Length: 172
Length: 172
Image (cartoon, rainbow over all chains, first blue to last red; front, side):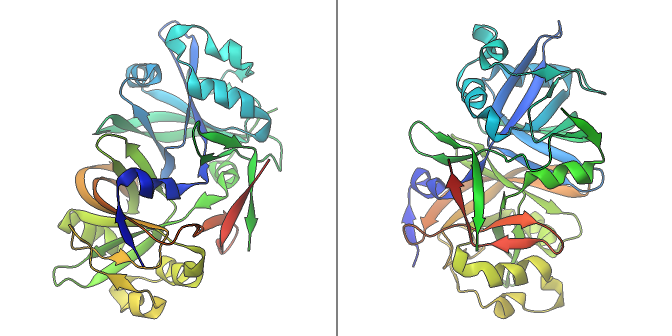
């Protein structure tokens, strides 16, 4: 029994939606990061991840220029940091310091790893596609890192302002 | 405390992962569908969704040719059907009949809507990007439909074979 509705009403049915981070650096090596729900795997061999980044975002400029990014899956300990990273712009000051996140050097790319995350994926951009008000950056994973076993990811369950939840529990 | 590991070990930290369906049609109008975890929003204005489809999949051929697809969010009632749609190929027979899914005509595209889903999005392909062994199809949403209020989505929690769960419950 389907009902035709405006897009915004229908897309609200997508939650819970995973939350990821993408980190990047500027020319001088200063780190930045964004929180994003719009991230997916996009190849098995070679392993690749795709992220969708708003055209006006500071990270869009940095990733486009550097051709590199790191995808991190924030852990439940990173809930407050994720709220900071997801709501402030790196153009307006050092939001990474405000978020209190421990960043560490990656092994292949210049974008940093997030020390407290469930997992980190170093990516080199191999292609991009303009999609409306965003760009999809597709990156080949050139190195992967995991945090502690059992660390749980963060999911958004929507609402206004969008709420972040520590974890989701599968039910059967 | 990060540890560098092979990609497959790190990407196992992604679960729970949402499960979507993409439906499509062949030249004669026969429907097909795939189950996919690799789907994301990719634009606010215009609304767009992106799906990542394996190059060898029958649906890849159909979507590429028709330039249209429907993204559906399967509901927990569609767990068994999702297993059929996700593990069989439409090249080998009428898997839609085997899945016992009720398909209904869409309003703009030829690909069908899934009657029991939480939501359906009719999409017209506006761009595509080859990413390793997959193609990202980006589609503008031209019509949206919702199922019953409160219907819950299906998520995969990984494992071998990959397990599907009815729903996930946010915990905080």
